[in-house]
Length: 151
Ligand code: SME
Image 1: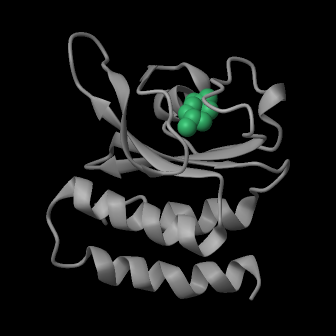
Image 2 (image 1 turned 30 degrees about the vertical axis):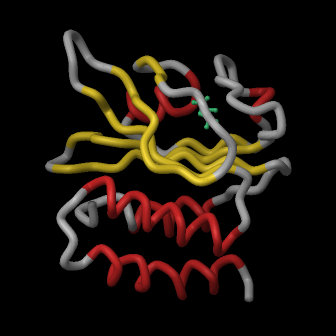
């Protein structure tokens, strides 16, 4: 199966898995599990926006893979930048992204997709690969289908 065929198979599965469940953490956990198992990524997980004084920060949520940084400030790293810009960021080579936060030296490329509720980013989905150039428009298009209204 091509990458696109895999997404075409799992996106409806994930949509069905989310139906009927209201708990945010439970839904994030299952979404991460499907993506991680299907593609064999290095690290797949959520960072949730923790509102507090000022703009808040990202806090580690459900994930699969090695241990990771627990907190990421607004506008820092790929995750904090995707949150601040409210836009997906595809990073073909993490070493060329200024301010990239290296949770693992094995991570070589990355995609971060903001998740929205009522037009506001409430979490980001971060996927890391141990290879360069893993993510492209196909990943962006299908992962963004998961990012509005499902969680
Ligand atoms: N590389 C990310 C940090 C999170 S870990 O990769 C899991 C970043 O720069 O935001």
